[in-house]
Length: 179
Image (tube, rainbow, N blue to C red; front, side, top):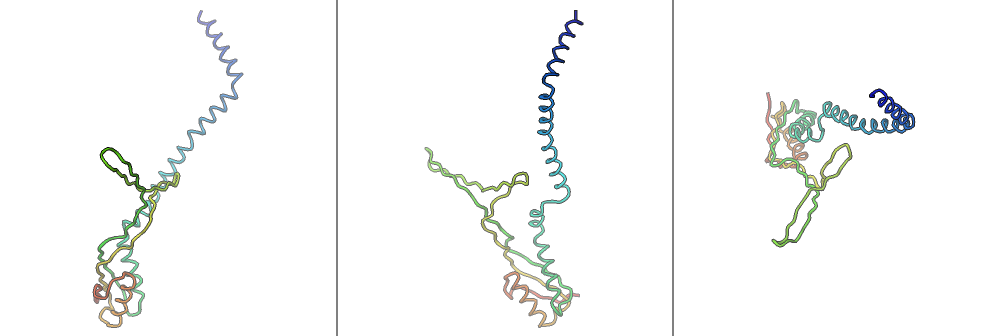
């Protein structure tokens, strides 16, 4: 009894498959294509994250040391300075003012307002806040140590250079002779 029932079902399934084999093939190919792009994007973002950290985050974390190194390299090129080392102290680091959107609603308890940051979407590249204004760091003082620090002419050039780059007055900049 089971044998004739199976053959009848087999014949029906075979005839349905023969009739709709192209529809099934196209549907299967479409399902595979829909599933593959998320896998590729996931692999690409994982590879990018493993290869290089976010340069903006890296720059924000290392800005004091990088600035001191750049300033020391620039000052070392001044005639008579020799090898220079720079130490900067600051009141506040670089700051960003972000665009904000406010929503005000009136309820029984009074006026309520909510403030949210405006976010710019870059598709699969991520999201970032919209920066309206950016402030430079405010320095408190500078110390320059160099081999030519005992020469008054070199000291004057160093004080002028550091003052021009940081905005500090001459009273906030100290130049010392190094070993």
